[in-house]
Length: 209
Image 1 (cartoon, helix red, strand yellow):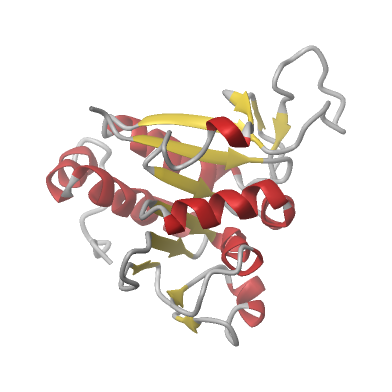
Image 2: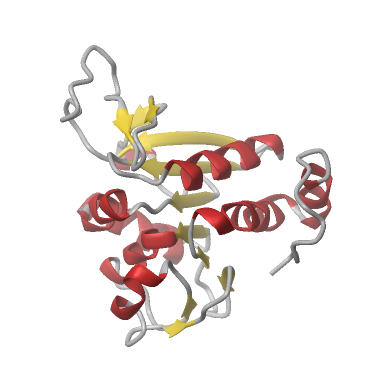
């Protein structure tokens, strides 16, 4: 059976982190679903779409697959939960009590929880325990006292027995390594290697991290 990933989105989400992750996972055969965490119409004036159109951090407009429905989005439905950054979007996602609950459910359910850039704020608001993480430097000070903060492109934390795998990354420039690592964790390293070559990912950039 194909692996499945739920990728969250909100107004202000960083579009590169969302689209690169979504696109790369799909290339690996992962079934991706994007879910708008915000309900109602967009404050940017988009009407007549359901779910509401999302306006990302640089103005790119994305029509998500669905509006987040927590009862249909649990770890029994998907293998990975992905939370992109973009400061405004990450704040909306991390402050959502529904997202906080999902993060805990996926982590407690031994699934993959992936956060990039300011998306790592969701680890804090969901109350995930002390472990290695990274993020965009703009929120570093909010994490250093709670976590083993590391200034590297991608951090994988899977050493807590019975818990899930937490994958964190730094920003738009690390979105490809972040996505490749998720492919590796979901589908194996051979699949990650297979899709990287036709994508022309520069061989001079070290991978895996």
